[in-house]
Each structure stands twice: as C-alpha cells, then as structure tokens.
Length: 38
Image 1 (cartoon, one colour):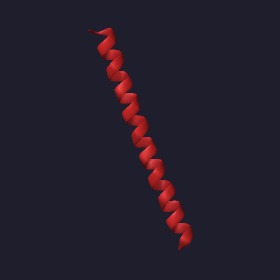
Image 2 (cartoon, rainbow, N blue to C red; image 1 turned 180 degrees about the vertical axis):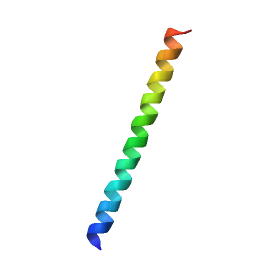
Image 3 (cartoon, rainbow, N blue to C red; image 1 turned 90 degrees about the horizontal axis):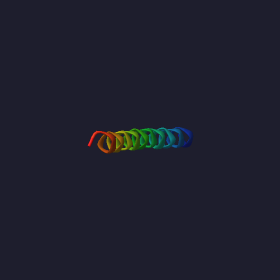
Image 4 (cartoon, rainbow, N blue to C red; image 1 turned 135 degrees about the vertical axis):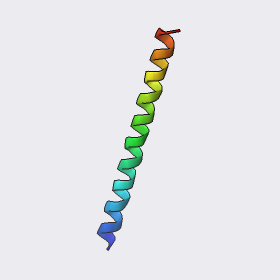
C-alpha cells in the first residue's frame, strides 16, 4: 500500500516535470520566433 502511494506520487511529479519542460520549450521557441521575425 505504502509502495503504491510512493510510486503514484513519483509518477505525478514526473508528469508535472514533463509538462514544465514542455512549457519552457514552447516559451523559448516563442521568444526565438519573436526575436528573429520581428
């Protein structure tokens, strides 16, 4: 039971981290587009 809770928490954190990375990449891409195609 405790193991399942821990792995679920880790999975959730991994998903949040993945979403964060995607957001950062999108923001950087938007900035590059804005800077180079102004």
